[in-house]
Image 1 (tube, rainbow, N blue to C red):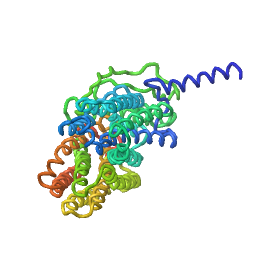
Image 2 (image 1 turned 120 degrees about the horizontal axis):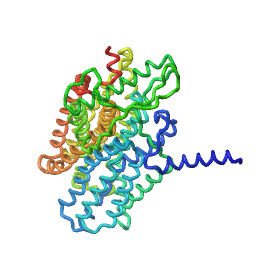
Image 3 (image 1 turned 180 degrees about the horizontal axis):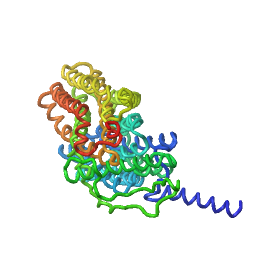
Image 4 (image 1 turned 90 degrees about the vertical axis):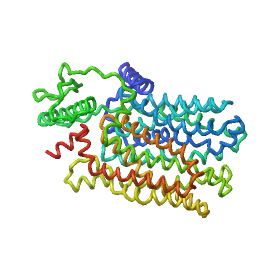
Length: 530
């Protein structure tokens, strides 16, 4: 090999090492142009990261009686190991999202979060004090929760709007399958000599495996929308290119103005300076200007995702997904006591009773992946290609929310209440998860579509709402069952579900008007109206 060839090889090696080991490696090409194979690998990693908080929240459930006796734990401490974990799963993603959006980074945060998750899992496996376990469970939740907000931002980086439904269906399969596969894994793991500690050793090994997989081949995907959302073209396409960029910048400026001042945006650009990417000129195609107008970067705001909830369309979509997820977690929480007391299930049998929910989630993810994008494109075709974000709230949501989720809840609650076969509870929970998966996937995709450039923050706001509902309903579920029985408990959850679906109808009908008033109307929608 000659000297030139060696230098070229050396440069290639250095570039590869930078992509693997820099905290913020450069994103030179549009992430949406990545190969199908690379995007598939990214989705696998996202599913693993999204599943980690779910299965780690429930994997130790079958070993709770052993933990109580080994650590001489009061019942309130055992309850807090689950409730505080869920609460921190709602709070921590907001900060992960704020860091991700501010520093324009995804990959390094996944590695850092999995490292925190691994260390907390290791400490939990060695812990001999119940209150120390409560603290470590909170730290474990912080580490596991990054994928729930940043993962949605990665999907927005890699997929355009019309292809996100399929990606979100696969991503949320990992998110929802985690809490359901956790008790099944735990039921088998606690039979080992280490008993309940094995579940935390499993979490430790899982986190290290994910870190290795990310380090090997996972690319940085943070997408600069203003840089990559340009229209190609030479001399004839320059005017359209400039117009497209100006429209994008104008929309971003209007949104900032509305969010900071709570005012209705106007059609003229705000005089705030903005970063402009070089644009070829008509006289010299391919040439670039010597200088660009730059803006002073705003300081990081860790509570910005919380503030996203002040926008009605974000709040409404978050409440709908929060109720659906909270009802699922409430039923999941009461299953061990109900099946052990009424059907005399042991630990591993209780774990297997979650298989019905896993099947329901798989079917729901398949329906979402198959129908979501198709229904969105069909709705646009009927309007002659007009773009509308609310198309994401597609036809399959209405039977999911008005039929499947309520039917599954009532079948579960009253089947157990009337001492019917345990299969009624297993099948009912599966039907509920079939509908819940479709609601969660579509509303979460809607949040990302409706807040371009802030997908991680919008997703974190939705996740925070979900976890608040899950935490409250988890704390209330068992006392409600003891007081009014599983039947009327599920009637209450069904009523919550119907109330949330009324909100979803309002969002579908009035969503465009709400987004226009709060500065979230997108350039494509404005052009189709004009």
